[in-house]
Image (cartoon, rainbow, N blue to C red; front, side, top):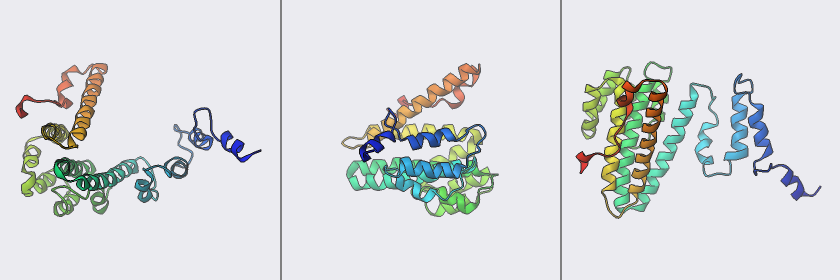
Length: 248
């Protein structure tokens, strides 16, 4: 058998690697009997190693993936992505660098606050929590150490209040309940995105537009869930306005 013929036999009609397909089918998602660690390494070697995503997974291959570590993996990958994205935006210079730095700075601070709140009362250590924070933003680096040491919601609010550059974030944290903070952060993100669209001669508008479209999809999904579960009285709980006349 010729080498070319052998290579062709390793791919199905859709061009997918048959070894990768067997790896998926061999894993029992109901019982979870195949070791997830083995599945993760084979997935990396067969699919991700030759893609631009591979470098982001290098530092995550030693994690023992289970239900609690899935979020750690996701946040670790997002942190690496944000660091590279910020460097790219700064390399462009001009208005794009300035506006994108503001957008990513808010995103970084938002993630730091959300990670802290969501990890309260869990087994996640303070050092592990701090390692998940993006290495940028107006809360970096001094207030990151303070957030990593927080044990309750009031301490998180106090840390944010101490940062003079995030006073706009501190006020809602003091007034809103813990479950309403995420909605306010989404509203604030949409406000910043709308301001980014008003800038001229820069590429940040494309990023802001994509974020606004993403929020529209979240709104549609929330409306559909409320209708399906007959909870129409909760429609306003998570709906975030994408456009607003207040910014005009």
